[in-house]
Amino acid sequence: MPGTGAVIMAYNMDEAEELKPYLVEAPAEMSRRIDALKQQGKKIGLVPTMGALHLGHMSLAIAAKNECDVVVVSDFVNPTQFAPGEDYDKYPRMIDADLTLLSQIKTDYLFAPSPQAMYPNGFDAKVHVGGVTEILEGAFRPTHFDGVTTVVLKLFMLTRADVAYFGQKDYQQFCVIKKMVEDLNLPTMVEMCPIIREADGLAMSSRNRYLSDEERERALVLNRSLEEAERMIHSGERDVETIRKRMRAMILEADPNAQIDYIHFGNTQTLQEMERAVGNVVALLAVRIGSTRLIDNRIIRPKANA
Ligand code: AMP
Image (cartoon, rainbow, N blue to C red; front, side, top):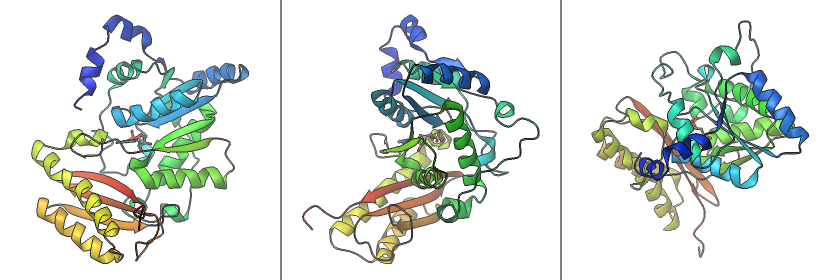
C-alpha cells in the first residue's frame, strides 16, 4: 500500500496511541454506547468494512467524519457472505494495523465483533433482496448478497446509523443495500463514495495483497479496459458488444489465462443490461487473475459536448 506507511510514520507514535478509535467487541456494548450518543443528539456515521483497511476505506471514514458527529467503522470478516471454498479463512485480519491507520483521522469507534457474537448459536434470520441480487456477483456467488444484507442490517440496527458510507468499488453491493433501505423503509441514509485507486490505476482492495508482482502488473489492464470503454463511448461507439469485445481482447492480451466472469454495461440505478451505451452507463467487470478474483467498474457519462 504505497503511501500509507509514510503517512503513519509522520505521527508521533504515542500521540497515535491516544488518537486510536475506541475498540468495541460486544454488540450489546456498541448498542449501549450508541443509545447514550443518540440521547445527546449525535449524528452517527457508519463505515462497514471487513478490515485490512486501506485508503479506499479511509476515504469513506473521512466522508463520515466530515458529515457526522460520531464515526463508527466496523471491522468484521462476515462469514455468511463467503461461500465454501472462497477466501474466508485466508482473508487478512489485522485489527491493530486498522486501529493505527484510523488514528490518523481520529475515528471514534472501531466495532470488531466476533462471528459468534454476531451469529450466536441458533441464529436463524436472513435478509433477502430480490432482483438486483440475481445478476453479476449474485450469479457467480449465489449466497453472497444475503450474507451482505443480513450483516449490514444488523450493523444498521446496532449503530442506529444516520448515514452509512459505501464504496463505488462494490457498485452492485451499493445498489442492493440502497434497495434494502428503500424496500424496508430503513431510517439510515446510504452514500456512495468514489473508487480510490493506486497511482497506476489499480482499484485498492484488501484482496490485492494476494497478487504476485506479475499478477498485479497484469491486473492493471482491468482499469485500462474500463478507460478504453469510456474512450470508445466518448468517440461515438454505442454498440456494447463491440466495446465488450475490445475490452475482452485487451484483458486476454495482458493475461491469456485471465478468467473473465463478466463485462457488463448496465443502467446506473437498476444495473439492467444495456445493449446500446446511451446516457449514463455503468461498466462493471469481474476477472480472475491467477487465483485472485478482482472486480472494478466505471460510471461513464455522455461526453460533456456530445
Ligand atoms: P470491504 O472491506 O472490501 O468489504 O469494503 C468495505 C467498504 O469499503 C465497501 O463499501 C467498499 O466498497 C469500500 N471500498 C473498498 N475498496 C475501495 C476503494 N478502492 N475505493 C473506495 N471504497 C472502497
